Length: 479
Image (cartoon, rainbow, N blue to C red):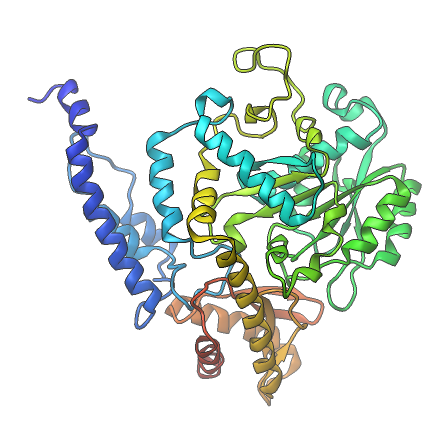
C-alpha cells in the first residue's frame, strides 16, 4: 500500500505536472477554438441547479481516482461559454488566453501580497500598472491606489477612505457613533454595491441619499443641491458624491465635470464608479465621455470588464495616493514592521484582502506583450458596434430602443404589432428565458421606467453585426 509520502511525492511530481499541463492546454485550446467559432455550440448548455448538483456531487473518494482531463471535460461541457460570440450578457468578458496562462503561473507561485517579501515581482507590477492607469485617467503626480477583488470591494475601499477624509472625526477608530450620521449622494442608477457598502459601514438605509436621473439615466447635477439639503434636514452629514461612468443597467455616463464642480463648491469627496466605463479613457474616439474623471478623489476601474482580463481585477485609484492608506488604518505587527507604515510595497496596508493573488501579473503581461493600442482599439470597436446595433434596432419597426447607448450596453425590447402593452413585460421575460435555455444567445434583462427590457453587453471582441442581426431574427422566431 502506498504511504502518505508516496502520495505527496506523486502530487508534486514535475513530470506528472508537465504531462497534465500539456494535455490540459490542448483541451482548453480545442475548447477555445470551438467556442470562438460559435456554430452549433450553445452559449449556455442549460441545466437546472438540481441537474448540475447531480453532475458534481459532494461524495469524494478516499483514494486517488479519475483523471484531470476527464473532470475538466465535464466542467467545460456544462459551463457558460463566455468565449462564444453570442455571449452578450453580463459585464464579464471573454478573457484573453494569454491572461489565463498567467493565472496558471499565479496559482502555482501563490505569492500572497500583504507584504512585499511575499510577492516582490507582483508588488512591483501592481505599482507600475496602477501608475499607468492613473496616468490614463489624467490623475496628477502623487496619485496611487491598489488592486482588489472586484468593484464591490473597490467601491467599499474608496468610500472608507472618503469617510476618513471627510467625516470630520476618526470614524475608523471611533466607529459609527463617533460623530454625526453620514450619507453619500448617489444617482438612482448606481450599482447596488454602493448601498451595500454604506450599510457595511453601519450607516443604514439613509446612508445613501438618492439623486434623480434624467431621461438618459444620467445623474441630474441640478438636483444635487436639493439632495444635499434633504440629507441635512434629515440630520445627516453628506461627505461624498458618487457618479457613474458606465452605469450597470444602461451604461450611462454621468456628467462628471458638473459633479466635480458641485463637490468642489461644497467640499465633498468626489468618487467615480467607473468599473465598466473608465476604460473609455483608452479610446481617442470616446474619451470625451469621461471628461472630468481626472478631478475625482477616487475612481474604481475594473480590468475584468473592458480590458479583457479574467475576474477579478479592480483598480481603486486615489487622486492623493496617501488616501489609500486611510481606508484600512490599523496595525498588524506580525506583518508590518518599523516606523514607515505607508510603504507602497506593503499592499496589505491598503486592501480588504491580506492574502491576495497576483492580480497585476495578468494585466502587466498583456499590456507589455500586446501593447496599449490593442486595448484602445478594442474599446473603440465595441462602443462603435453598440451604436450600429442601436441603429439596427431603430430601423426595425418591431423593436424599441430604450436609450441611445453611451458605451457597449444596449437596452431594447421586442414590440410586435398586436401585442397589448400590458403583456410586453411578460413577453421580454419569456423571450429571454427561451433564448437562454435553448443556448441560442446569452443575454439578460433589466427593468426601466418603461418596463422590462432586454439588455445586452457587447463585450466579446469577436461579436459581429451578423450575430446581432441573428439575435433579432431569433427573437422574432421565439415570439
